[in-house]
Length: 526
Image 1 (cartoon, one colour):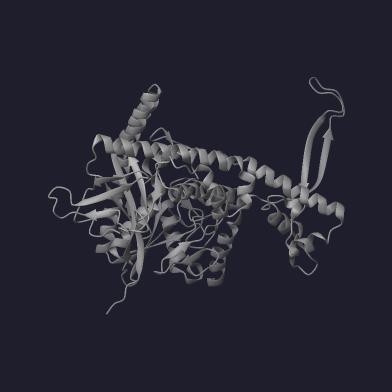
Image 2 (image 1 turned 90 degrees about the vertical axis):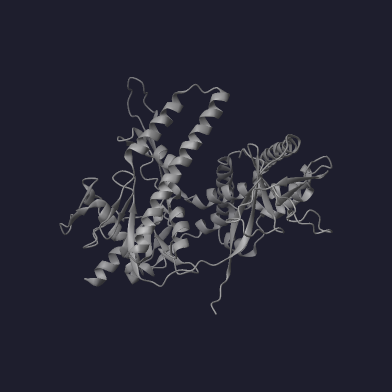
């Protein structure tokens, strides 16, 4: 007997009907939650220094009661969950700011002054200022690289609400290795870096009143929030929307094909969209089943010449006239007057166009994966897409910037669309870091920008190999999977529970690790 473990996925239910009175009550609660979210956001923003040094739950449990009231239409537990959600958003934002900060210690400042009078400058005026920084790593006579002791200290101290009140004995011991003057300068620098980082935090504004509700109406009665009424010929599935003052019964749409199971007891999100109430909860499902390893291909994704290029020489393009028509309509909406009413109408039209484009590209992936099944392909390798390298470049064919085109076509989600559809077919989708796939020669391994003199053509400056640029990139992507030394490289890839290769997140300044791994493989083979 084959054993299956359980995975979790989200399921969505939508209201089938709600009378005007019930709907208005729920909309009022949605507005209340939206207002309280933004009030909580302002509170977090005003206490950003304390929040940056606290744990999410500790901060939320300390202050959520400030927003509780007996007159509130939702329970104190729900208010607490809303505050945790707001706090988490700020914590994620702060974490990114601190992680992306490059710590540098100033070494010296050189000033250059004008030595004579000019038309708009006088002798002695400042001409330029140059700041030099101490090296983060110093090379000893033995050849060993040693990290500066100040940088790790600063990385720790900037996370403290007040760096001057450090109590960690290990950190204090390190600080005491410096004289008092230098120690005070380090603490002052840490405090200044922290203040500069937190000053870059922006107030988060929420636009929906979506919030988390408990799976049971009351902990005592254990009454379920989703009930079945088989005696009702029209509406058999009902959701009980619990408020502090009363319960609102709402019929749900029931599709026997897609709503075969639902978890009545788990916490769930409630979202109001127009005149519809949506309930999002999680269910346990069997793990996906994947086919035995067979044939694999690499694919390169782009939006200029085609949509997909495969390592076995096939190209999949999209309907250019279809995209041009959508872009033209979008530009027409942009020219319309932007009163509040017109802006809302334009947003709805734009969203409709975007959904239309998404459906189209999902359908292209559907057809592509159908062909893959017929060919016996079990593994697909693709880049860990960001599609941000051409953000500000104008696409002359569609007369729109790439950033706008990518948002319109939702191509940032292409990887997820592949994963979702391929998983249903038992096909594994592997991802690899995108660095150098378009600059690398698949024959000799030479990585050079000069290899791409023309956008459409690849010509290696080292060995003279020429190829279609997209095809060359697809072959390099496939090589990341087929070559053991690259596939198992711990600095580039990890593997999930189903054996799928997952690209590691590599910051831009550490991209040299990918170059070293690729060129090292070619050097070894030669």
